[in-house]
Image 1 (tube, rainbow, N blue to C red):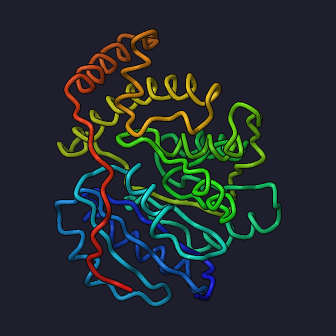
Image 2 (cartoon, helix red, strand yellow; image 1 turned 180 degrees about the vertical axis):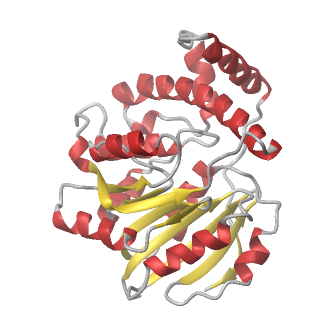
Length: 301
C-alpha cells in the first residue's frame, strides 16, 4: 500500500453546524498531497453523516465511521490501533474547527526538519484566550487537541507498547501530549518540551461560544464541569505514570479518579472551582463505565 503524505482523523460529537466547513478546510490543506480523512462520529445523533455524504472533496479521500458512544479516548484508541494508514504524518483535528490552508504542510515540514520532534501542534487563530494559548504552545510541551500531528514511528512504538487512553477521560489531549513529552517513559525519560512543539505557520479557528445562545450556555457549563474533572484526572494520572509508567493507567478514567480519591482530595482555589468540583464529583458518583467499542463504517474508501 502506498504511503500517504497525510493521514487525518477528525473527531466529532454532534457537530453538524461546523463539520462541513471543517472537512472543506482540511481538503484545501491537502492540495497536492496524497491524503486520507477518517471522520469519527462519536455517539453522534444529529445529521452530520448526511452532511458528510453530500460533500465533494477535491484533494483527499474520506471514510466516515460511527461509534455507538460519545467518547473521544475510545475514538483515538481505535484510530491509532485499527484505522490509521501508512503515512508521513498522522493528524488529529476536532470537527468544530477550521484549519489554515498551509497548516498540514507547515506541521509536516517541522517534523521532517528535526527528528527529535515527535509531535507538532497548530495555534489558535480565534477565541478570547487565543494569544495566550498560542504563546504557550510556541514554548513547547503543549498539544492542542484541536489540530496536531504525530510522527509515525512514535505512534508505532505507542501501539507496540499497548498503551491506550483510559475511556471516559476528559483530558485526552493532555495525556497524549504527556506521552510525547516523556517519550512514552514517564519514570525514566524527563519531560522535554523539544519533543512537542508549536508551529507558527499552522493555525485553526473556531466559532466562539455566545452568552445569548442557550445551547452555548449549556455547553460552557458542561465544559466547566469537565475541566473540574480534568484537574482530578491530571492528579490521578501523575500518581500512576511516574511510578508505574503509562502501562499503569486503567482501562477507564472513572476507576482511576475513584482510586485516587481514596487517599487524596481535589484542590480548589475559589468558590467557583468548589462549585464545579462538587458537580464533577456528583457526576462521577453516578457515572457508569462504558466498554471499548469498535466503529461502524458508514461510507467512503
